[in-house]
Length: 312
Image (tube, rainbow, N blue to C red; front, side, top):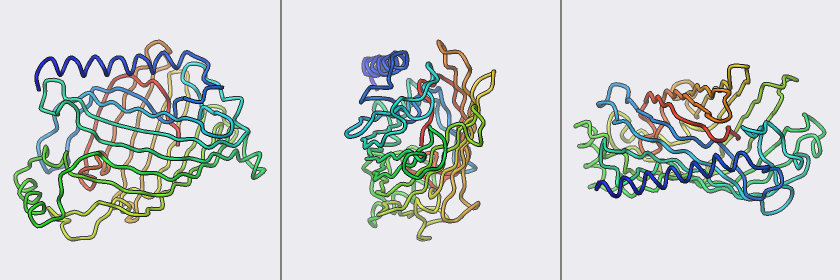
């Protein structure tokens, strides 16, 4: 990459997260455009388990937002700064959401200028549990969604030529090749969000189930070639918990697929309790760390800033 391209991309990235941070200081409870899932920027490094050399350091950006189309706008769970639930939490809502993730390799490798990891547009219906099902607390919600998740890449691995190239890349440990492998899936989602779980005002629980419509996830290289593995074997059910202490937020996530513990993955993270500097440390272990090479188990460590807390 040329230096001007690096600087322009870095400037745009800083502007994006500066705007996100500023938005967190505003009253979002009546806004139709609002944060949805996590938004963070990390200095990150990934290490494949016993297959190739560790990945170069990268700036990983993860962002998520929503726009309410019908019903009452609602900011999921707690706003990081105001620590407050939306006044519209007991009304239904239909909204559009988008979650994205990318790695920006500033001076460590060619990434053109970024490598897209996740593009996840979705449509959601939110139903407050207490109002419609007469159970749960005031901030507990049930979600139904129709989603597309892909990585925006174009390299084919299913044709005879594509499969041969993938096998050669695997045999030589060319992990850069697999960053460009195209992956995508469409699915229905069903999720449950429990704030103040079990009567504890500091505990949030979330669970999400995916019912896949179709999957572009064939494996044509390595020991799993021709095994029929699919993304659903690694990502069917997600469980997550967030716990607030006086020292900050502790988060844990567990992802299970159709093959159970054989293909599970987990995440641990910590966010400092400083509103002005939301220091964030994140560790992930297992497959599904990158969608392009989702079967490969990896360890990923990052440190940076988190601008919005997780949702479903």
